[in-house]
Length: 192
Image 1 (spheres, helix red, strand yellow):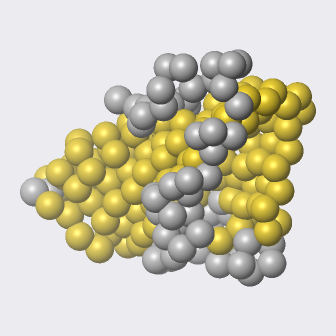
Image 2: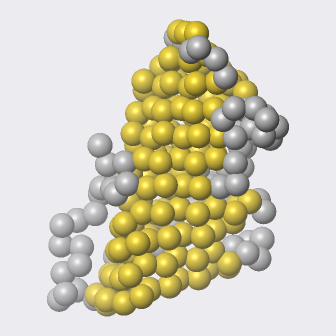
Image 3: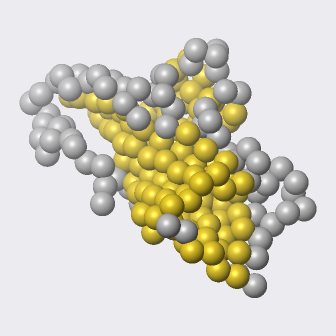
């Protein structure tokens, strides 16, 4: 299940449309950092205020002094509602964790609300104490909130921590300390 809400005639060349090869878009955020989107090609639909990036798309961005890299093959940047979405496989990487998914979208305001939603996602997290084993999780839907340092796994949620596996309807996981904050209808299994 993806996040498509773009019309099929989105890039009709008879509408206000422009193609850009080796596209780079740089946006300075409120903290002064430069966020950058790079792709082999971009199509701008000025009427709809949407930019579609295609081919080896990479977004380098900063939130609260943390650096992120988001990689996918295609994504749409909607300038009207200030959101980003992709129906392609995506990988989000940071210093201590990684999320991979079949699709993603940002919240409706990427300037003030930095949440990112992933479909059919997996994540891995290395705790601050690097002597500890990484934690792994997966779910039908993953919501990442960088401001709070939280990952919410919903639908067939599963986390493997050390020697236990937790299966649940939803699990709220704290990336800052590697702890599970809450789980709903949880089943705990020995994973050794």
